[in-house]
Length: 267
Image 1 (cartoon, rainbow, N blue to C red):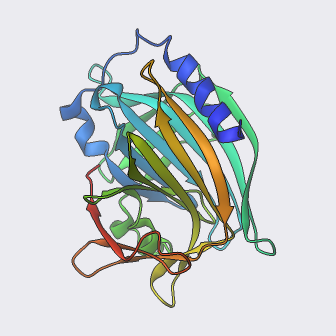
Image 2 (image 1 turned 135 degrees about the vertical axis):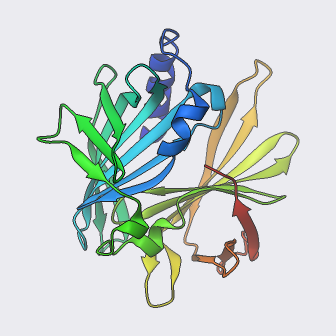
């Protein structure tokens, strides 16, 4: 069992005991959704796939040009109407390092603290993030309001995308970005592709690095799923945003994407 799957199982067990956490208030949460930035910080706030489950908030701490980042992912956030803020808990903290020689993203020093509460408050300029692990609150604004932010073009890829044949999730890991695609294979099974990408500012697109893991997700009679890794391939893929806001997936090694066009699937 790989490390990411183990971590997912731990989160699932923890979240199973959180029935007392209030459901997200969609109306109050809407103003928080999307991408926010500060000096050395990127935040992404999105709805979970199950709208009743609440919000997920991810914070990436990285200096411009660095090959190291710290990623904090809060898997359970909700709008608190009495406090008029987002309350967040179930945080996973992980350090990411991009090895330029081997072209691989290495995760280390992860920790799980299910009782560490943090909050996001609206301000006149944007959001204020407050957490005990920080020395001071962090004030965030929209990327278009921060003219010094150099990763703005890359951040436009973040979020969920879909087509008739596939769904895609793009996540910011700091020095690299994770592109995960799910494609139905028939008989209820789903193929899963994972690309670690870096942004090529010269070409204006995302380019995969190293190898791409492949797996097959198969449903069980009990209503669950089994994910089986079926190989790691030296594949080269490009992801390009078109002028009309679509995402073009092109795998130039084995044609997995076949120049597939995807549209944004919402927050």
